[in-house]
Length: 303
Image (cartoon, rainbow, N blue to C red):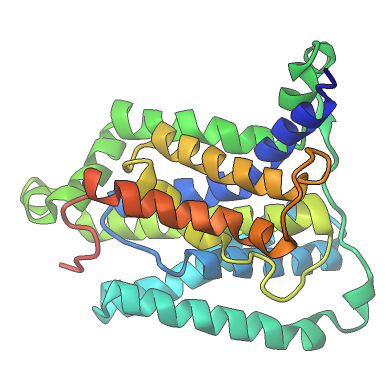
């Protein structure tokens, strides 16, 4: 039996998971602090745009990823000003910002990139870990990825440790569960919510740049294609837990990888069905499991 298609499928699943892991982990941190980000896709889109822009100007991948984090954080800042200062409804603010970012990035492609439209930014290359990448079957899958893929997967246990083994992480969760009680104990509720929100923006921005700086090398209109909503769904499907969120992301990206490699796997379905498959799986997952998990009690509440 030829196992090459299966190996390539697993490798694609891990690579496709990285942008969603960054965004979903950021959303998890923010929601644990009580702030919901419907504009997660806008954060990723802004990060993808600013990452390419910074990489083209500087010629540096590091500058590109820093620019991406700043781009995502700017959308988070706008959300924080609207919700945490002017007390706007968080879901409405998120919807408005998604539309705004999509419009701004689409309009800015010409004026910002101009003659650079045909020039690709520097992109990450796969990094093989010596000896481990030579292991039979799984060496190529697990140990021949880009550096940001490794970083994305390391981010999950780091987030688990933050939530469960640090005083800061426990205080962050207290803000999302009972902000009034936390405030009475001296917890800086507003400060922690700002931290969660800005961390989400930066991580989602890096996730967006993973689509461009680890692959395309250029920015195209709506390059995220709704992946921010899939990352948001993964947080819910994963029960607001780091490892549960990771498993949800892997489920969604497995479907995406099957769609991309359908021909090699011998799957013959109309292209339209394959393209919509990841989104259909996301909707079904939410419909079946959303009522079985409990969000932070103060999620979306500005007080």
